[in-house]
Length: 397
Image 1 (cartoon, one colour):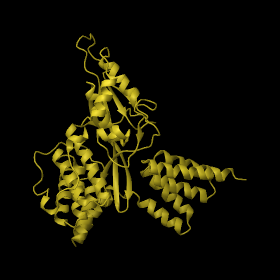
Image 2 (cartoon, rainbow, N blue to C red):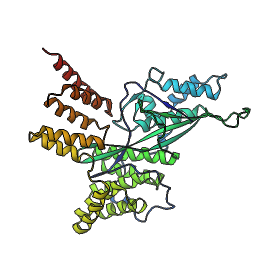
Image 3 (cartoon, helix red, strand yellow):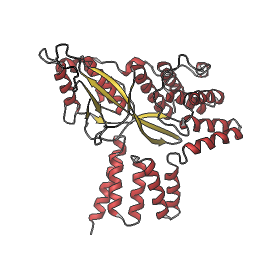
Image 4 (tube, helix red, strand yellow):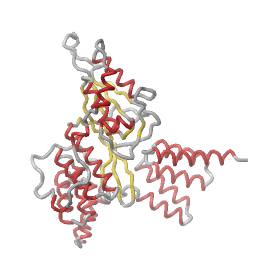
């Protein structure tokens, strides 16, 4: 199997969103249980959704996509040729001229229309185009590729998805094994995936991921009712996709439905006892229920698994910086960076600390990293602007 790193225009690091209330993380795509845990879905607690929710939209092909494929396909082209053309179209400078944008999760047609998306959206789009061309396409979850972002009191855990692209077997080939038949297409440039653990995921799991992302995004926007219906649809698509069950619990928790929230988090922990997302959320739920002793027991288990939750050291560093202890702040920021090496906010604060300490070259290096690892055009522009101003100031006599 070969690996191809596809480099869209203006590459920025992005990834698949998962959601939590206090903390969440990527869980492997477990084997779906035969039935949903009893009482997991509580439709009566929520009004009907205001947004149309259709799982099939995740991989649906639009008329514009069919027209694009029709122009690409030629009577004389073989499947291997079509795959090469598609790969060229995906690359920087290709016909699609794709850009990274993790500000929202798009389905395949939306990503094609916008020519932009996060890794899940771009993988969905590519899979839909490839299948329309007659190629085989399977999404893959890259294990151990989680990172974190936060908005307000919500922390989002990010995993990574790529695509296995294959051309049909040639029935007339004399080769017993076609080594070039399968290749991995990845939308995070600048790194090798060799040696990485990946897990092929079904279309149902891919749709659950898409719906779970939409649930996370609507929850962040304050649209809790729609977030419930998106999370519900994700769970029904793939009951074994534990992040969706965790998201469902978060929706319940934020609406004050503590019994339903506890049930969801315990359902996750029954399947994955070391799931720190659900564990952290359960601690919060039990605390709000006034069951402090039980909450403390779970908190100690959580601390053993995760001594420093994401952003804890960063926040401590910012407090030290505000108190005037810049050296201590730098040490805490550095410790956070060891846990989150691709976190732009941490790189930014390290740049601020280094600049305050008169270490201009190090400040510039971390601002470069902050811009490179940004997940949205707005975030990239923010850090790129700060980098430009720093460089301008360093040139001032």
